[in-house]
Image 1 (cartoon, one colour):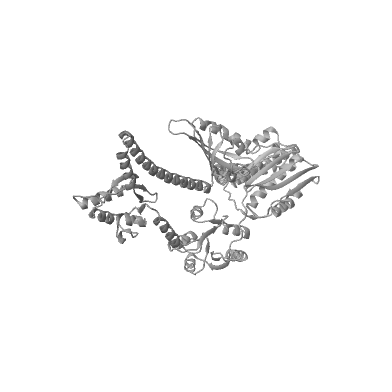
Image 2: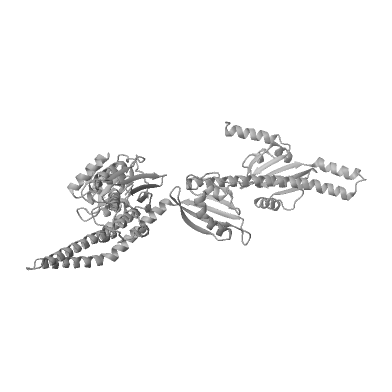
Amino acid sequence: MISDAARANLTQAGLNLIQQALSIYDSDLRLAVCNRRFQEMFDLPHALITPGARFEDTIRHLVERGEYGPVEDADMAVQSRVEQARAFRPHYLERTRANGRTIAVEGSPLPQGGWVTVYTDITEIKRQEALLRTRSEALSADLLDHAERLSETNRALAATNAALEQAQAELTEMEARTRLTTEMMPAHIAHVARDLRYTYSNRRLSSVMPGRPSNIIGLHGREALGDEAFGKIAPYLTGALQGEASVFEFTHDDSGRRIRVALTPDAVGDGPINGVYILSMDVTEETQARIALTQTRKRELAAQLTSGLAHDFANLLTIILGLQSRLDRLPGLPDAAHELTAATTAAARRGGTLLDRIAQMSGRREMRPVATDLRVFLADLRTLAQPSLPDAVVLDVDAKTLSEPLLIDPGSLQDSLLNLILNARDAIGTGPGAIRVEAVPVRDTWLEITVSDTGPGFSDEALARALDPFFTTKGGEGSGLGLSMVYDLTTLAGGRVLLANTAHGAEVTLRLPLRPATEASEPRLVLLVEDSPDIRQSVREMLIDLGHSVIEAETADEAEELAEIPGIDLVLSDITLAGQRTGLDLIEALARRGVGAETRLMSSLPPGDALRDRAAARAALLPKPFGKAELAAFLGGAS
């Protein structure tokens, strides 16, 4: 590679070999480049061919020397040419200089600003034209005029061709930049013609729909997308070709991803539709978050609707149980009456259990994901569930393909899987039979945990309604809330529940977001603020076990002073503290003072508490009680 200085010298040497004069002025009307022929043709002093020389000074020098012939007002002549230069346009002209020589002047603007001008001495050409006119009596005057016009037109055409080549180069550069921009976008951008064949694509289809090709130009939509995805998009493409723009979402079955597609007809004004522009984006994570938020809102609404009813119903059950107890103690009561009071008491107690289940479903429940080894988790699940199964029913668990820890809420998942295993047990009966729990990843998007059994399978009605609250096939023995609870916990985590029958029995699949656990965070210096000595000691030991160093404080005032210690990376504070100030007051004070340490909160206040809700809106919050795994996940960002 040569240096910039050497490259500039080579360029200047090449320009000096050109027989035409050349000058380039920038947008500020200052000289950028010229060649030796420019100085020689106009006999310019060295100061006017030095980069930075003003265009106005050069024009003034030429006017005063008589380059443009006699002028009445030199200042006006200079000003006129300067104004023309400021509004520069491509041009070609021929003019006769004061010394009698004729030059052709060709100018063209530059995309970076400024312009380039080429001066060609055409005196000899003009003399030959004059000689030809004088000596060629056989040629008519019209023919000579035509030859002269043709010669001038050819020179103008050459200038136009040069301008077109420059425009083409700029267009090519613009197209390359546009393609680079579209390639960098996390979306598939494409265009199809009316025959649904791709005329443009940014090679991002495979990142949005794994397994599909990247180079799809020339392919039909069905070839590029596959039969399943194309079948879902085709009706909207037909509408777009009829002028109907649309935005819709669909699930790509092969990868399990949720994809949003925007279709825009390719038409100008009321003109014909030439095809369709397509924008496709992977919105799987957005959909998971939306599902979880929707389920949370449903739970809050259900809690509002049932809280008053449950309270009154609990009071009624209490009265019923009390009356039945008094009735059962009456002397001389027949044996049949004792049986009736026992049955009534059992029914009332079952009603109390039902209320507890409703409270679990409608009350606010928080997901607490921690790094979990699925193999260990399922092994513990088997140990927990096996004693509840008949001897002839075999429980098999498999998570061989999942060796890395994942972020899940183990408590919610364990509740769901135990419920499904017990449902499978009830379907099989005393056996013989088998229940299988299998966990597999679906690409890099979902974790699918399937519970299958060798029972009779779901009825058509159960397949349609099994997830509805209070629907049961167990008669008076079931509450109808088991699968509803599974559905509730799964959707709260951003997942889905799928029911199906197989050749051997029923199958329930929990599809959860696949979120690998992040690696352990780097050691940090933590300021721990907690007014309970026992809790402070417990959290300190957890932090030290996780590799962090700890400084302790009991009040917000004490913590605010300690936060100035250099090197503190994190302030972890309880919300309720000894003294007048809360943990929320502390982190707001630190923010006002510009303390750079990260701030996080922990609390045993119940969900719905006003102070807790305000604090959670201000900083990440870890509910108490928690263990080391929950704390590690919280500090790693999975709060």
